[in-house]
Length: 186
Length: 186
DNA sequence: AATAAAACCGAACAAACTGTTCCGTAGCGG
DNA sequence: CCGCTACGGAACAGTTTGTTCGGTTTTATT
Image 1 (cartoon, each protein chain N blue to C red):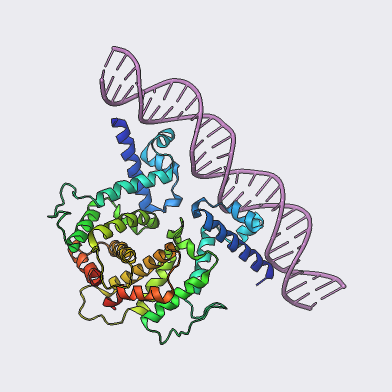
Image 2: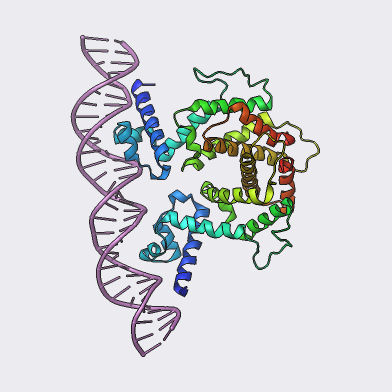
């Protein structure tokens, strides 16, 4: 990939992120983005079809990272996706959320949070189904996909609460809360 | 209130609702609304400051109804807010959601669902704190507002799932699922 | 070092949408 | 019946969007 493309792409992402921290998505104009990114109008539309497209790609980047196995440079915690207990999985994802940094996480509770949550939710459903909820749920009235959905909703709610509180709890502590609230159905 | 005002107000609400069922909120223009409502441009802005304002008022209407004690004409179920058990409370609210009718409920899972959920969530937190979660939560690690938040998130998630499934379950049945998933922390 | 390909920029553009103003008309309530 | 108020329509300036054009700079390659 051309070095210039990378430069403008990250410049746009960065500018967009800063703007999202300030004001709601719907009130951000393409003009503001390209001004802050110091990029020509034509260039923007060469990279992204529309503002929605930019948002989508940004979310993809974010959440691909959050649900990946590897963490960023400085942060580490011993973990393997294969062998993890549910509690360890939750802790893992929370560390990845923290690792996002740069105010990205605050976007979830900001004025435009709903937009990101749609993407987050989609990933979480898959995650909950694969890693958290056991295959067989004997002796329950509620269907499995109800429970998957329940877990994913709770997870989203927890993260929102966490961010709103100012990330005061450690991932481990938060995972304990979560397990306490959700273990009975696992 | 002037009869004319009522007419235009409901006409606008109705048109707005139909449009919301078709396309996402952000892509709906004031022009479309007033065309469908058959109302002059000036008139629209006499009633609502902006499109966002219209949305807000509509949500207020919706959720004031959902959390009220009384139900609409035909639907009834014996209930009193004072004496209800948590399960009865949940059933009650679900009946009220059904009672919305006219595709209003589908808005929660549509493209613009996130917008409504913000309003819904606000009400639900209050509701969960007042009616569902006991005052004293002895012997727990998780703080009370974490649990309140957890319950509210689960409730929202449940409703979304419900609507997405096509409202196949009865309120009572759904309340059972919910209690099964959430009772352990009550 | 030369060259072809590309990404970039800036300006200008039509089109759409917003929110407001002005004035004449029609319907309401007392 | 009369005054008041909501309504309608048209026109308005101000934004924002997405596109087009020609010209310039950077990149990767030979």
